[in-house]
Image (cartoon, rainbow, N blue to C red; front, side, top):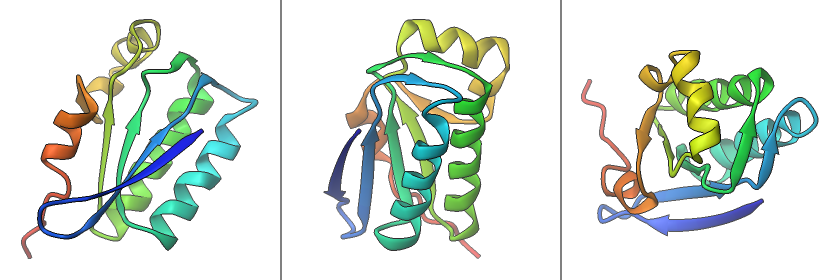
Amino acid sequence: MEQTIHQAQDGKTVIVLTPTGRLDITTAWQFRLKLQDCISKISPHVVVNLGQVNFIDSSGLTSLVAGMRDADKVSGSFRICNVHPEARLVFEVTMMDSVFEIFETEDEALEGVPREIMT
């Protein structure tokens, strides 16, 4: 899994994670731990690039939901981009495409990150 760090225009750090292959019961837990680690130790602003993930199951979706919740708890942002066509169907069938912020490209996802939350 590739991890890159970007600086947003406002100086905040954004992590881009790019898992590869399958995001399923055998890999989802490791991915979940990586998300937790990045959010707690590096930055609450995350972009997950799914361009190299050709299969995702319910375990993979669960790890993404957990990451989104973790980022939300610390006023971060969680975006998904570049969803592989075969994986996109899973998001559509489960209606998770309406839950996540999904962008076509990594650049588009990075443009709006981080989004400030006004209180």
